[in-house]
Image (cartoon, rainbow, N blue to C red; front, side):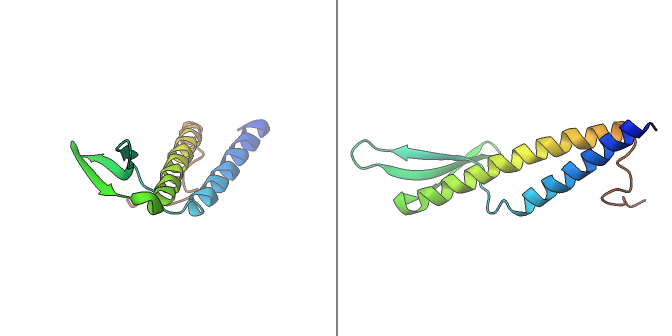
Length: 106
């Protein structure tokens, strides 16, 4: 392996550790949508489509901000997972991933 290649691998592994730290700090997550129903008296609900069935819970005005934050956290989680996937694919391609973070059961 060339020196520049090993530096690149080292940077990818460091980035992976940074992403793992970000994962730890995300907080509560929820997947779904905030729905507002009504024209005069707006009612807020949280909607989730799971296994081709829609589940809805009433939020009210007090819990809307929490639901927004949980949705934002979910989007951050997906973004981090995408970044980790790309790095892991590169590390695996370079055969540098093995025995780095876990040891698979054999």
